[in-house]
Amino acid sequence: MLKSQDFQTLKSLRLALHQHPELSGQEKHTSETILNFLNSYSPSEVLTNLGGYGLAAIWEGSEDGPTVLIRAELDALPIQESNSFAHRSTKKDVSHKCGHDGHMAILCGLAMQFQASPLSKGRMVLLFQPAEETGQGAKAVIADEKFRNINPDFAFALHNLPKHDMGTVYCKNGSFCAASTGLKIVYQGKTAHASQPETGNNPAVAAAQLVHCLERIIETNDFTKKTLITLTHAQIGEKSFGVSAGRAETWLTLRAFEKHDFDLLLTLVTREAELIGKRYGLDVSLSHHESFEVTENDYQSVEMVKKAALNLAIRYVEMTEPNPWSEDFGCYLQNCQGAIFGLGSGHETPDLHNPDYDFPDELIEQGVRMFWQLLNDITST
Image 1 (cartoon, rainbow, N blue to C red):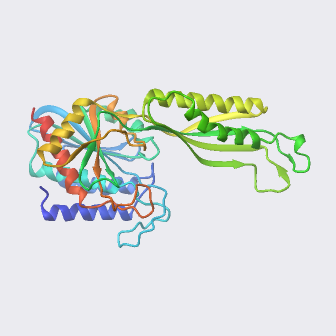
Image 2: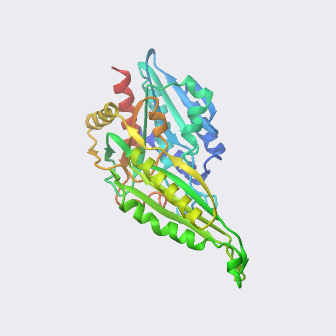
C-alpha cells in the first residue's frame, strides 16, 4: 500500500521523533515537527495548541459525511534509554518507550494516503494529543473550545503490543484497558528526639498497617474483575538517626478493569487510610494523580475494526481480558462511537516502558492500512 519511498520517509520521521523526545506537557518541538510534515500534504484546516501542544489536521472529502478522528500521542517518558543504536534519544532521562513515535508516524502516513487518494465523503481528523502518559491530555483537548470544531462521529486509536504476534490486530468490546489512579496518602504526626519518641507522634506503625491491609482489601471484597493495588513509593521521616519521624508518605496505584470495581476499590482504600490515621491521632491527606478512566470500546466500532482486518487479510484476535495498563483515549469515547485496538509488535520486542524498548518500524504500514480501511469503510456507507 505504501510506496517504498513513502515508507522510508515515515521511518525517517519516526527515527527523528525518537531522537528528540519530550515529556508530557512539553511537546513543543514534537508538535512543530509534525506540523511541518503535515503541511506538505495540504490539510483543509489545522488546529494548533489544542489542550497544550496538541495538534489536529483536518482533510475534507468532496461530499458531506461522517467525521472520523484518528488519535496518536505526542509525549515520551522520563526513562533513560539503554539502547546504543544511531537513533537513540539525545535527551538524558527522556525517551520514547511506549511507541508514541511510531503511532505518530502511522498517522502521518494517513496524510500521505489522503493526498494520493482523497476520501469521497466525510472528514479525516488526525489528532496528535499531548500528555497521554499523565492522563491529562485527552481531557485538556476535549475541554479546549477549538475541539468543538471537530465534533467527531467516530474516534479510533491503536497501541502497539509487545509480546504479541507481530502485525496481528487485537481488540474487544467493552473495557479495553484498565482504569487507574495514583493515590498519595500522607500521615502527619509530630517529630521528637529519637531518645524520647513518646513526646511526638511517629506515623510509622500507621503507615505499616496501611500497607499490610492492602492485600486484604483485594481478597475480601467482591470485585467482578481483576483489581490491583501497587505500592510504588513510601517514605517515613528523614534520614536522621536523631529524629523520630513525624511524617509518612505512601504512594499507591489503584487499578481495575471495570468502572464499578474501580469506584469500590477507591472507596475502600480511602476509608481504610482515613480510619488508620484517625486511630493513631494523625492528620490525613489524600490526593489523586495521573488518573485514567476505563477505556470502553463500543460493539459497532469493534465490529468495524474486525471487518477492516479481515478485508485486509490481517489476523484478528478477540481479546478475552482488558489490558492491565491505562490509556486516556476513553475520554473521547464518552462523546462518540469508536474503539482502540492493539497491534502486535512481536515477541522479541521489549515490554513497554522498558529502557531498551524501540518501536518496530515494520508496524508503520500495517497501522496505516488498518486506519485507511476504517476510514474508507465508514465514509463510503
